[in-house]
Amino acid sequence: MTSDEELFRQWQRGSVDAFETLVQRYQRPLLSHLYNLVGSAQTAEDLVQETFVRLVREAQSYRYPRPFFPWLYTIARNLALKELASAYHRHVELGMALHEASIQGPDPQEAVERWEQQQALQRALVCLSFEQREVLSLRFRQELSVKEVAELLGIPAGTVKSRTFQALHRLRQYLETTSFGGEVSRGDPTHG
Amino acid sequence: MDNHSQSHEIPEDTASQEEPWPEALRSVAQWYAAQPRPHPSPAANQRLLARVMEEEVTVIRASFQARSSILQTVRMTRWQLHLLGPWFWITSVLLLLLGVVVAPALPRAAAIPMLIYVLPLTAILSMVYALRRVAPGLRDIEVSSPTGFVEMMAGLVLALVCFNGLLGVLATGAMALAQWASFSTVLTDWLGPLLLLVAISFPVALRWGTLPAMLIGGGPWLILIVLAAGLPELLPAHFLTGTQTGFSLAFHLLAAGLGAAALLLLFLRGLTWQRLLVHP
Image (cartoon, rainbow over all chains, first blue to last red; front, side, top):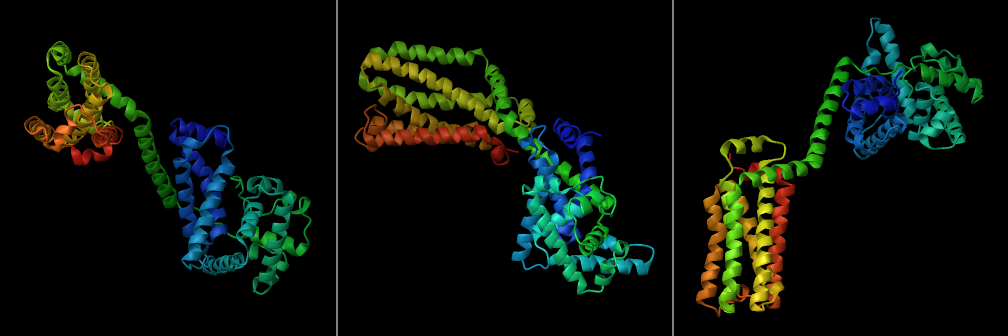
């Protein structure tokens, strides 16, 4: 598989397909990550778009073989932080948005359950700090190792571990107050 | 953000080896990892690609303009100068030689003002002549080219100004030797008006044509010349006789600075003014 850095270099040399491959490679994980950070599918989608636009805009500053992924991630992270700061100033409540995709499905009962799970997760994530949400998303949704997360964020591995622990602990405390608490304790990941 | 992450389960090495959490936290982590993830819809994917392409075109255009425009303008200006024909240059040099031959024979009070009167006028006439030579077909191509008509014409005018300036410097040198006049005083006396008048008449020529440009650029200058010649006790005369005061020096330097800045601006940022200046 062609590396990200090579693809980006190919795009700099005029290959449109190379950039499309990068979009296909990162659009979905980026959307998932940003959704966990900002709590709104629509906002996350806009931020994904803006992230790629920034990539294009700042393409001239890229020098091969600078690692592509941390650069992409940093752009996305800064945009998410900016969006959250802006939302705070606009007094917009994040984390309560309904994710359309999660309620679609042939079985209405299942759709409702998924929607409730989604809402519970978003409410729970609001209790966490940005850094905690970020670490959780990178560790468990993007499946990066502690070392990879530490390198990406430029923090010690110990900090990643402690942030993860605190985030999970707080999440657990929140879930215990909801109907999902019991199911989580029983270790049933497929059902909230 | 691992693109190969499709599973909702936590990898064993992630969950247990790196961080041996209590069972309760492991359950929470598993619950979190198992939550549904948003997927970009095909429409969102299309929107994203369309937006990226749009941005790419904008960036390429801006980058092309920044990198290539000046080189392209210089190249096109060279062609324009070539298209002026040999007689333009021959005539200019012959006029200079005539001035050099005649100047020592004239009295100082007439020779120096003559030089100061003539040089700005010749610059305006050169510019008008050059702009009139631009063929309509060629102009159409230039208007649609990425360089921009205004930038290219500004390049041509700057080249002519430099040429006139060079001739002027040579004539001033000859005059300073023949008449024992101050080289710098005579130089600033004609250079300031030359640059300012060309900078004023050039946009007028682009927008309204060469005749209005000649009138607006040359008209006030001719009035000043008449006033200076007829009424030497009036203020304008002090600016055109080659005798310098602090005020006249400041005035001429300011005029030169403004003129040069305006011409350079049109040369470097002509595309910005193209719609305003180029007659439809």
